[in-house]
Image (tube, one colour):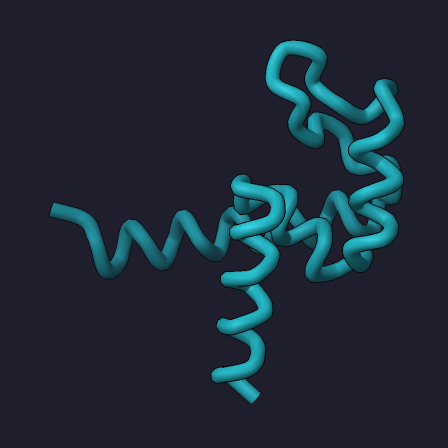
Length: 79
């Protein structure tokens, strides 16, 4: 259901504040992302944000989602 999906994305964005982390939580689950954020090997030391997604399939899905977002913005918000 689109309404539920957009609501959940909004909740994830409120929690994580970065779309790449939101997409990772969408695909891997919040528990996995919270564990990754607790591991300094996966976190940007300057910003405390998720720098590396350790699961290759999730990382690929996150890149694909980010690319789709960029294409959407280009199509609908380009000046």
